Amino acid sequence: MHNKVNIAEILSRGWQIARQNKALWVISLLANCGAGIAMSLSAAASGLLNGLVGQNMPAIFSAIRPADFIAKYGMLVGLGIALLCALGLLAYYMTLIGRSALIKGIDQAGDTVETLPATSLRRLWNESKPYFWRMFWVDSVALLPLVVGLYLLAGWMWMDIYSAASSKLPFTAPPTSTILTVAGVLLCGMCVTGLLTVIFGWIVQMAYFGIALEDLGVMAALKRGWQVVKSAWLSILVLGVILGLINEAASLVIFVPLQFAVNLLESLAQNTFGAVPALILSFILYLPVYLIVTSLLQVYSLAVWTLFFRRLTSAPL
Image (cartoon, rainbow, N blue to C red):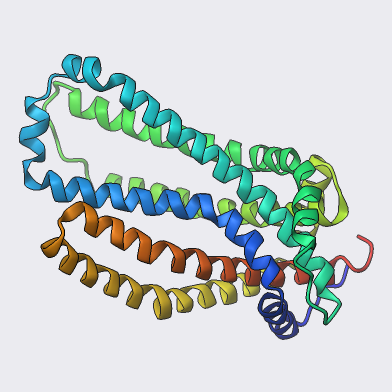
């Protein structure tokens, strides 16, 4: 494996691939569509709830009897939760398949100057369907223990807090040394957890490339991801920071002015048409721009990482 890669060349070539191959934008759009709609619906529902209920929220909830509410709206709430779960699963499925199709399409365009034909979209999508379950199990094997550990840690902390709060013993302030010790342990735990999350994320991302580009199984892909991360962790860190700064800059340049304009139009429309039409208008205005920009950024980011993986693994491990 090559220990050094030309990051500047990868960033430049990744932008060429993302700019030339509009067909990849469509795949990225499909992959982001579910997440984008979910985020927009969540924001719209939150704004609608705040606009319609506002400061009357405590009085409304105090007047509602749980038994009456469940009897009247239980089925509707259940159907809503089931629909949200179904949409979440569909979004997850499309995200994994779309990511696989993007990786394969980027790899095909990586060493050529020709633009991928639009007819290759269906083929890339269909070729990526068999990778879904392997990517799903990669997520589960690598990230599930970490998530379970975090929830267990959070549950243990809340149980301690609850037991202390419910104790009938007189409260005495702990000494400063105890407070500093607990704060230090929590801070170290957060740092270690954050570091493990980043490392596991790198391994999973490289395992995705092993599945889509080398047709590896779950454990072989995770092993491949670990080998790549272990041999080039510094380059991965540098490239990740650069791409993170690019995404943040794009968000500041595009989304902040867009959000300001949408809020302004929403306030004007709310005074004219009402709260619900104003929220629908903001949803219609914000969603297309969000999907297009995030799709382009995803194509560029995956193009860079795909080229990076190919450069690193051009020699046998």
